[in-house]
Length: 326
Image 1 (cartoon, rainbow, N blue to C red):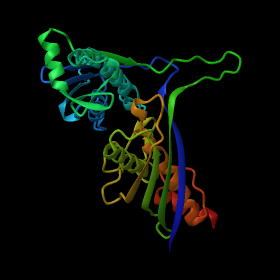
Image 2 (cartoon, rainbow, N blue to C red):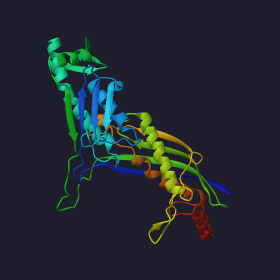
Image 3 (cartoon, one colour):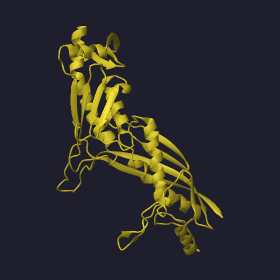
Image 4 (cartoon, rainbow, N blue to C red):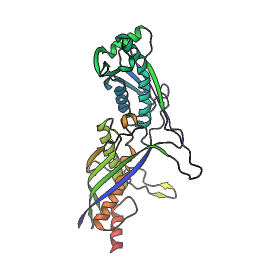
């Protein structure tokens, strides 16, 4: 008999740990043609941080991200970025990139004020154009950079960000362990075959508070990838050891989800701007993985009325739990 069930999993996750220094830095330089080089230490391991850094700097400078070249994670030339872990790079390196871009704008903004005979405090850059009091001036950013170059004025900036390091209160033992937090809820539908013990995940709905989605397509990809990892953790992936030695060291007997195992995943991006994040953003990498297995376990309980506390929920464990309940 096949039985259906629905389960919910919720999580919160700290981003930007503050127990120890956790810095990152960035360098932003305008080139002669008003394109920009960005040097950051954060390693892009497929999550898209280089794209996000380009978008953040482009937004602050008022130019297209297509005019940004990101040089990342090259210890010969890039500044400190910290580890690509703990869902921290958008938040920490992103903040560093914003500060570096602000610094890199100082000389061009002052030069634009001179060229226009206007107060630089009223001047902004947007869409490659110089604006004054929210009105286009007709002067381009490229012309401003060219003017700086003719005078030997360098147009570059640097920035670094470190969440305020805190210590424990000596009386209460309480502290502030993270700069911000991510929140998520996932809901899954499952079908459990009570004769074989096989659990099939039919659909996943994943709602994630990301602060602000700098790149919604990348956020959606992170959510889908994380939920798929959570499915593997919940149903398949189990390390077998004997006397501390791993016995299933390859993918013939350590199972991970394939495309045939992945259900429809509906990503729901919740944007509640984080005041301390770059343009309100915070991380989403690991939060996408955390609630899935719990939601699956709850859905299996909803389907068969038996609570299983050991992951993964293999067919053998499901059948054993059913037989014990009987």
